[in-house]
Length: 183
Image (cartoon, rainbow, N blue to C red):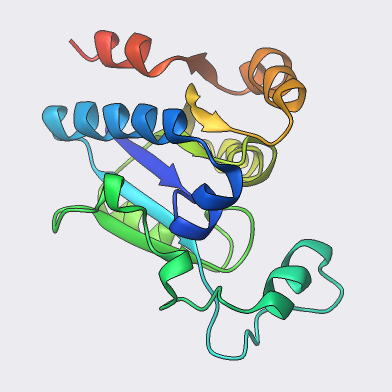
């Protein structure tokens, strides 16, 4: 079963807002394990065109980001953090909404590589991870969530999602457990 690691929203502006180096370290461990096994690594980041024409004033989350500015697809705030610097063999996908699929070419990339199993890491657990997991499940992907390579502002929300909600549609493991299972 061809797998791919999705490293979602580990971009400078998001990581700075959440302020956790531990989750970045865990994501780095996952990236290293995936590369060592030859799994595709796909970095997903949110970014808007100049003037943010994708941002509707009706969208509560993104209208605030669009008004703040600085989330242009070329902005330093939307680039993958240096600790996770993508290699030339990695794919970087720019999305326009919360889910990694919406407004991006992720599905085309995954189909081209014959991927049917997604391993998810991301910030925030209640944002990109939840939205991508739900959409990927509806698209019949097998799913694994790396619980310690995900982060949410609210630790209780993270706990409920990773312990009660996600297991209905995904295997939920730590980076170490996943890496050990790779053989």
